[in-house]
Length: 288
Image (cartoon, rainbow, N blue to C red; front, side, top):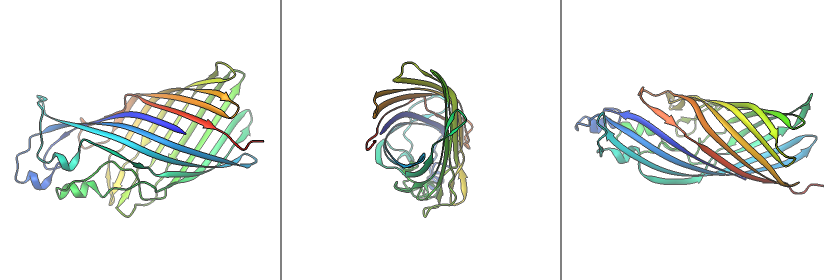
């Protein structure tokens, strides 16, 4: 079981006619600034069952709670602004619900002195996909940009590696999600790849710690074949795993951004995640 919390800030300049083409045709809307804050919580139930000889199957069943606030200000003076279209784009609201799950087949094996676990799987479309927000913007209709689901079964790939020599060691991992087609709502999720590597150290026989340098790339999402967005980032993370009993362990990780680049039609747009935290507990049962 894992609990994740993070805060995301999205900022960009808004102008006519993009904000509401129909309203912009009849109303003078000055250039202004969108400042959206998303506080994001995820509870992820991770289930795994061994099949013998290093093989295992695993499933992830996440549930999200997202609290959203937004401020509008005029540029460049920063005075508060109440745009006439505000409710169709961003709203102060709390959203919650299941997110797409995952199903994996894993194999753990020794390669020399390194424990390697390649995994192959697929996403399970349990979340609710939204209607095309860009098409609804063109019609001046209320819409939602926050996606809880893709509506598609997407291939998932990952590989983890662990090396240990006495109290010292190293970790490395890479994972990818590769959507191949668009769902019934015309949405195809972005293709993503993320990875990290770094040293690890056993402080005591029960306490294991690590530091990682991480990089992630998120491609453009597609709505009815039209591409939007895209993001690349580099971050640093650290974590600790403490073994309470042979069957129960707890884990804590923290991640901070180092560099990021966002693809957006507005050159001043930014997406930042100052800090994300994760806490988890794992236990085994049925062992002989």
